[in-house]
Image (cartoon, rainbow, N blue to C red; front, top):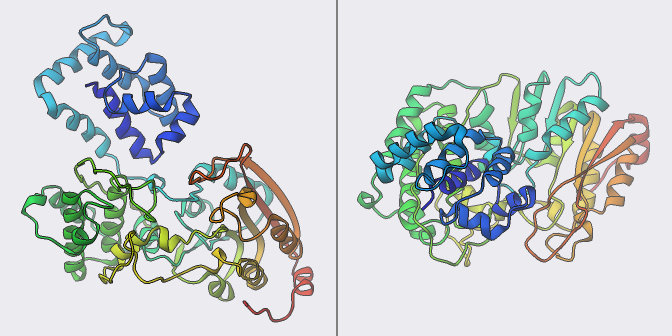
Length: 457
């Protein structure tokens, strides 16, 4: 077995990138990539260099691993031969423990906000979006991300603007915002000590719990599910010994560490019906910071719109029928920890926080939203999956409707960027694009264009 492949898999999972996306960007056959990551195939030097460039990882370190794997053969990269020989010596000395030693290097770094798997994440578009906003707007002091999702745009805004308002009505997302950048006192050593204690737990010694009884052997490997349930209950039991920031960090840390272990394709609408390969749950703290210029909400965006004033509002609502509260129901259940009765094959609780933007009411809700926002700039993300062959992928607000509504608010500019889309397999796009609309609001035009009172209908 080649260790370099397993290390490459660790690096990829750390970045949260699906194997198919790697294949599309580096041009290596998907079967080859799978065999490389399973340690069954030794990657070529060129493949390692291309993968390292894509992962933004030091290719020299990976090449050393490759040469040490190939130590019994002719060395193809003599510049690192001496170091490779030393690594090979370490592998012989440490045996199967060597990989965990290499993983220690990765685990010393805190987990980044962007590493979570999430449909519609703007992580890879954040530079493009923020650069356009900075170029096309002026005198922005307050920035609002009213459908924050993964909050990658919010995180970028925090370093640029005097005040940032972050909103999403999912429980898990709200906890994540508080953990990663909410203001509050916390003791890093205290939190680290708690996480370290979780890493010493033996799942065989743990009792059954709500999480393992419901999700074990389905969404998570059974022993891992026992750990997840035990850790979640322990965090709840010590809640009053923790500050709100510490409580949020521990919960967000749990989500981020179990995310890559989930037996899913990236969401919890279904699980993969195959035997789950055992993997250890090794907890690592998130990259928690605290900002004084952030204001965090968990509200319906249309209600919040009536109660805030912001120089700029970034709007990235769900556009198709996929309800995020249902796609990520497991995290909602984990964070609320009210242990609800679960239903169906996917083990979902009763519906809550269902978005009208995923229904035929989407257009009227969007119109109501922009009508009631007190802002100088509207910035709207949109994508061209509106011609989808899949009902679940088809956008509920048409492109023409977005343009018409925004133009009633003021002069609107449209920008586009090629971008890979989430696909369940039924729809193909040869030219998928992310669109960004930037509207400079004209209050007189907006007030004249909209009825005095809008009903959501």
